[in-house]
Length: 231
Ligand code: NDP
Image 1 (cartoon, rainbow, N blue to C red):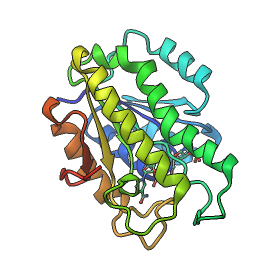
Image 2: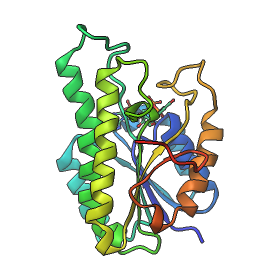
Image 3: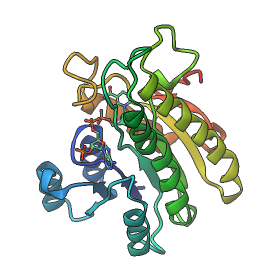
C-alpha cells in the first residue's frame, strides 16, 4: 500500500530519482530541496504527479525545518528519508584538511539527519510503517577503511551511523525502525561519471529495502541490495 515519504535533497541525484520512483508508485511524496530556482526537473515532476508536494528546506537551517514541521503537523509520514549530503573538498589527505569545510560537512551529513529525525518523529510515529532511514555511505564503515584519507566525508558518515544506532534504541518504544543505507557507488554529481551504477538502479534497490525492512533490522547498516554492511 502506498503511503507518505518525506525526502531531503530532491533537486538532483538520488533524491530526484527517489522522488520520481516513489511518485510513480502513487506514494504521496513530500520532496524538499534548498533552492527551488535550481529545481526545474523536480518542479516538472510536481506538475506530473498530483500527490507530489515540493517544499524548500536547507537541512542545516533548523528554523526552516521547524516551520516545515508546523505545516505538516498531524500528517503521518511513513518513511522519513535523509538523503541530502555534501562531500566537501575532494581528496582530504593527511596534512591537507580544511577545518571549516569539515564543520560544514558534519553539519549537513551528521547533525542535520539527527535534527530531521527529532523534528519529524511525531509524524513518523503516527504513520503505518514508522521508518526513518538515512543515506549514509560505505566509506563511513570503519571495517571497510583500508585506504585511509577522506577524513572529512568519512567521519561525517561514520558519525551518522552512530546517530542511526542511537535513534534505533531511543525510538524503539515508539515503534519506529531506523536504518542507515549505502546506495552503491552511483553516477550522480557526487559519485561522478565513472561510478558503477545508475541512479535508477540504486534507487530501485533502495526502494525495495525501504519497503521491506522489518523492525528486527532496526539499527542496521544496509546496502542497496539489502545485504548488511559491517560498521
Ligand atoms: P549529489 O551531489 O548529486 O546531490 C546532493 C543533494 O544533496 C543535492 O540535492 C543537494 O542540493 C543536497 N544538499 C546538500 N546540502 C544540502 C543542504 N544543506 N540542504 C539541503 N540539501 C542539500 O549527491 P547524491 O545524489 O549522489 O547523494 C545523495 C546521498 O547519497 C548523499 O547523502 C551522499 O552522501 C550519499 N551517497 C552517494 C554516493 C554516490 O556514489 N553518489 C555513495 C554513497 C553515499 P543542492 O543542489 O542545493 O546542492
